[in-house]
Image 1 (cartoon, rainbow, N blue to C red):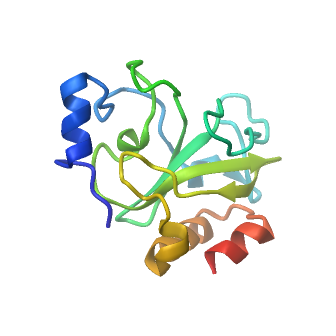
Image 2 (cartoon, rainbow, N blue to C red):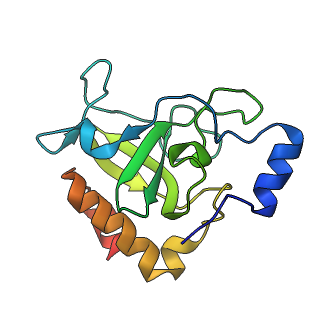
Length: 156
């Protein structure tokens, strides 16, 4: 379980005004985006396409897996100093999570994901934690989304 509430990181962000737990922004349950195994943009109903997971990429989706095993996603808002943007702590309103990071979609299929969350401090967990990988694997299976074979291999 990874915690943000009460962490040194949250206290630092609260002191400088960059904590986004209470921000009202669109947070999506991954299962609600899925049609015939593919993720659709909720506004346009077009297959989700996101940029590659590169540092400072704009338009990337972030994810977190809650204690209930559901995965929530949102478009990464970018600059942390801007109010009303989604960050990892926004997805479950500071609740502890089982996993968090960034996810890439190509034609509605998950083609890449990582463990990069500064809020929950999950960097390097994909490689080191079987529980972290299992939480993601289970959430994806329950959502019904198609997942690229390279992602399935990484989560095995």
